[in-house]
Amino acid sequence: MLSVATWNINSARLRLPIIEKYLEMQGPDVLCLQEIKCQEHQFPADALAALGYEHQAICGQKGYHGVATVSRVPIREVTRHDWQANGEARHVGVEVVDREVGGKNVRIDNVYVPAGGDEPDREKNPKFGQKLDFLERMTDWAKSLDVPTLIVGDFNIAPLESDVWNHKQLLKVVSHTPVEVETLERFQKAHGWVDIGREHIRDPERYFSWWSYRSKDWRVNDRGRRLDHMWASPEFAARATGHSLLEDARDWEKPSDHIPLVTEFDI
Image (cartoon, rainbow, N blue to C red; front, side, top):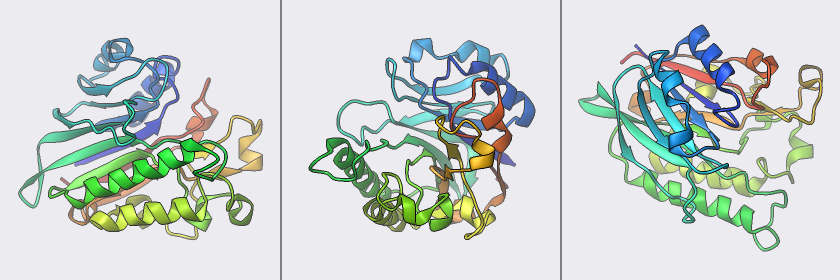
């Protein structure tokens, strides 16, 4: 078995206590973190290694963005892509040593897609255009993949109506606009990605992974969105035996505004 978790942690150093709590509680084999908000030498590598996660691939940046994949099974870093073409740390890809599907080594790609600003207009808001361009570059990459791959992370897009608290109200809000959903659909088709979350938590069932800090009573208001995803190549996805999320983590002390997701594979 191989269990893989993903979590936008919103500062790995600030939220180290809840990372440790999660690892001690659920103990996934691999944890992919986004928005670590630190340079590589500042990442709490020793603390996580002390919990058994000594295999690490860290792509950091001072104060912003950044991704890290930590594992208690051997991994080796294979790629870092700058899909925004501006030097931001938003991707790291690893192979899982001695784990294969169909005779090929499996890989895990950890990505933090840009949020895209507030205005869903490329001309008025350059950040929105950068987000769409990022996704198009991801799509070009996906077309050339020839190994079983799991891509996880904060996609910053909630594609389905049941992925948001109110579809009609959010149609003009960045993360749920038709142009973003269409762009993400092109990425999905480029490699035949299987949306593992929605294989196990079927649409139209409610499925959220993010709640704004602005909502003081997030459980009562429940104005969530599914921004975090785990998608796999068809042959890799066929090995998934379970998928779950930990909503209680949103209530932990000094929480991230995102919660962790985890998928188990028979590999």
